[in-house]
Structures are given as structure tokens and as C-alpha cells.
Length: 149
Image (cartoon, rainbow, N blue to C red; front, side, top):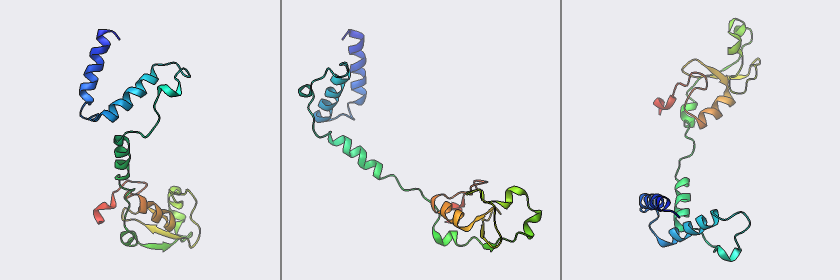
């Protein structure tokens, strides 16, 4: 390794020293890097020590579990939006886009249950109920209903 590479490696090591704070992690990293510099298939099994990854690997995996699930609206808020039966005769004057559910893209049929949000956009009841259980925004206008929580 020439002097410039050594300086670069030393600089990187110093930046990550707080992260790689124990010898187990550093040894594991050195083994991985040694294998990265050999042509594929030329590293013998006895040159690399297989075993448990360092604890820091598992700590990072545990932190992924701490990420919250997709947050939608609670059922008691979703149920506050009115539900009506679709009336095909009354919908004759509607815009064509308003005659279909923007979530599943199926046309509304007579007497299907339509849930209308406060922003006036309507959807099949089942489609919007599932949507709002995973998201807090209207699929069309993106109005955020977290203000109701």
C-alpha cells in the first residue's frame, strides 16, 4: 500500500473509530476487506474465519424493528366519514372520473357503498377503509386527516 492509500485509510479509520469501537468488529471488518482484495475463488476457507457476525450487526438489525409500522387512521375516525349507496341515476351529471373508485379503478355500480371524505372525494367503502388504515391522506388531493386525531 503506498503512502497516499495509507493516509486515506487512516483518515477513514479515524472517522469511523467511534462506530467500530471494539476489536471484534474491527477484526471482522479486516477479514472482509482482505477477502475483497483477492480474486473470486482464490480465498481458501481456512483464510477466513466463519462465525457469528459482530454484535454491532445485531444491534443495527434490532434498530430496524424499532421503525413504526405504517401509520393510518384509527377505525373510530374512519367510521366518521359518511357512507351512502351509489345512485347511478344521480351520478349521470358527474364527471367521468368521479364515477369510478380512484383506488381500485372500478366503476361504481348501483347501490354499492361509497364513503365520502371531508374533501368530498368518494371511494368504495372497502377500498378507502383499507387505504386509511395504512395512510392518513386522501389518495387524490393528499389532504392529511391526521388533524382529526
